[in-house]
Length: 502
Image (tube, rainbow, N blue to C red; front, side, top):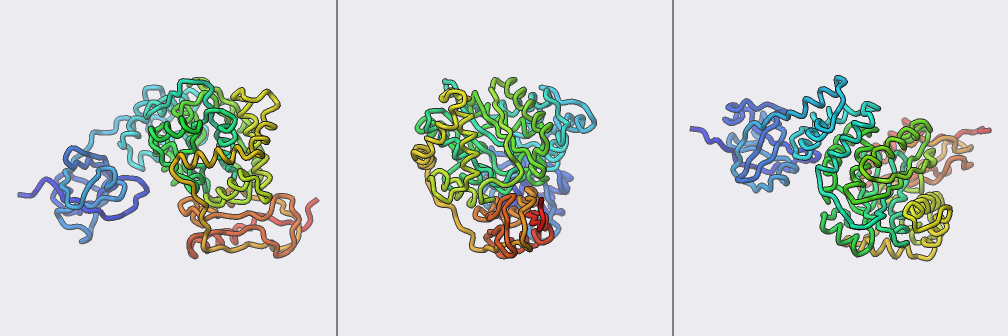
């Protein structure tokens, strides 16, 4: 008689956070249960169980009485080599019918959104099903009511802070502008001025770095709910990754798939932003929307529509939303990528002479608006107070204190492989393609490789000579450096130099 269990093996396979179980095609359980590739199965070890996606093995990688687990599955179930696991078919994911309905034109409701988000949180969606959910909201397929329903469901899916006071501030950028790492500076200035600002951020979706990726270079961002509360109560602020504190936990699950698809859907973006702010206990949030021809938001009418939807969704969940439209025509600062952006942030906070002026000015503008929104500066006086706070060193001292309260303060790493790309001719820097720059930085390894990315040496309108440096690629391996350079060579429009520009 065959056993109704298999012994587990840790195969050390990184499946990008999706739990995967590997089973031999001819093992007794696989044949008896009728499992095939991409089936979802319930894996049970003692009292613990997870849902995982089946991959079928047709070699001798596993014995007949073994099943292998991916790293994600191994960590989720807390297994040990040799544990006995039982396998069965999970209950059908009924909420997928709502996703299919949306793909055919049926709107999401409060009930359907709650069911979908609950099942995503509980790990019941495979990556294929998650991709269908992301596609169901791509472009402008979600209206405001649907977005509000999804946002409410995302907040309800996790824990939520209540700080017992008001105002509680937050700041966010919708993204699409490489190097625009103003948040650590803004948070430091706001907290130094006495505002409460429990800032959580996501990892990068389609960019070479998000705020959480950049801060991960400088301090510990993986704070639990209780650790985050302790840091904020001590310093009045934090700079943490929202996923580790179980705030709107489905957001990070969806982001993982959006990143793989290179999609950042408008309705889901709004739900992501607002749900994280509400879950963090914010009452007021300032949102930066960069607008430019190759930015995420490319036209003024798109920016106005997005701003209105953010305000409406925020209001529905008790959040006051302020919006600033900013220049999205070129990168901000000199660095693109976690460590390079962290270096820019430190230069601004330390008031160093070579600090990027554009990053400093943008951070002061946003800080001033946030101080006014939080009523610690009179209308029109916020920027001056922000500048004084930065110049005095108070913001730098607050930043150091926040990092130390979060567990460490580190220096940005330096990439071992670098190559400078020079101007092919003399002329003016006439065009910068932000999407191509972001693509090149990601090919170099960012954000997974913290030191990888691009260091910019020019700005739009600069006059350059032939062979003058335009940018320097940074990578942690020679292969990734070559990939990025090959991409730039085949996309000369990334940074265009024109000989005669009127």
